[in-house]
Image 1 (cartoon, protein in one colour):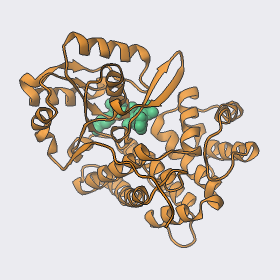
Image 2 (image 1 turned 90 degrees about the vertical axis):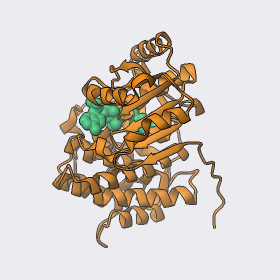
Image 3 (image 1 turned 90 degrees about the horizontal axis):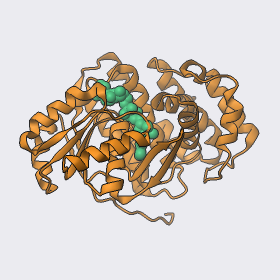
Image 4 (image 1 turned 30 degrees about the horizontal axis):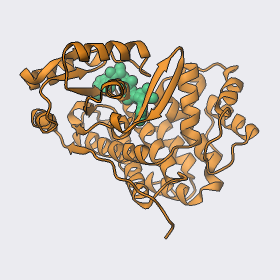
Length: 355
Ligand code: NAD
């Protein structure tokens, strides 16, 4: 058995179809009485439902969460929280809304109760990101880790099929990189493999029947496991590349992860054979397919984008992305080699199936 360090994080998770009904009791358990409800404009309806459920425990709704947490919206939300004398933030939505809650918590220490409606996994991590003057800064702080998470699969039923598939593969990417993390541990490995397997069977089922509650439940369960991995161990080349592509070229988060993952796995394959075997097994790949090919096939067979050129990247951006991605060094199973990463990016740009 290898040596490892494992730190468990103090969080309460409530999981189940209909578990939103437990919100009031969970707010009381946090000792809060005036919750500010956060959402994107598109999810205002769900935020109103939450506020209705809370009645007098709701201080108000702030519905202007946007992707990548611009500093201006973080400041505005912090000000609203102060003005309303909120003692807790409830984030209902995906990573963008949870991220806004984290920006409030970082400033004020308010506890966050997260109700995730995508599979991005931010609710399980102490990682925050705030974008200022076009640059997204990320950091880690225990204050931003949501204290309570309510996973109610009924709330993810309205997530459009394409975003369900790409968001699910975004979650798989956390677990895949967790399996070869330099600070990995056996508990995270178990969660990672189980999380990939749950999403690997749920996503095709969601495409066939977006309202099917078994598949929605499996996907959210997988998202919880994969998000936990993201919150516990360090990520590598894949996340670094996606951060660069999202932050510097404004590419959509979940789709970018979906497209890059097979190529990042192919890059690391020879340096992390055990992790690759676990990923391929979890995805139910047949003996002739690698982990990289299984990740590619999962996207392609479920009508997700497979080429960066199809989601808004320009051919001339490949070289600049390479420069930015190689600016800092970080742990990765295979050393960072400029020419090989250029090939990786070009393959992701063109959408070719890994060989
Ligand atoms: P998102 O939160 O931006 O949501 C995308 C769109 O889908 C939004 O319009 C949202 O309102 C809508 N939506 C979400 N759930 C819905 C539902 N059930 N029904 C209908 N519409 C729904 O997307 P995301 O992929 O969840 O999050 C991406 C952001 O989260 C990025 O900024 C990323 O960097 C961040 N993130 C952070 C962490 C972390 O640990 N800090 C982890 C993962 C992602």
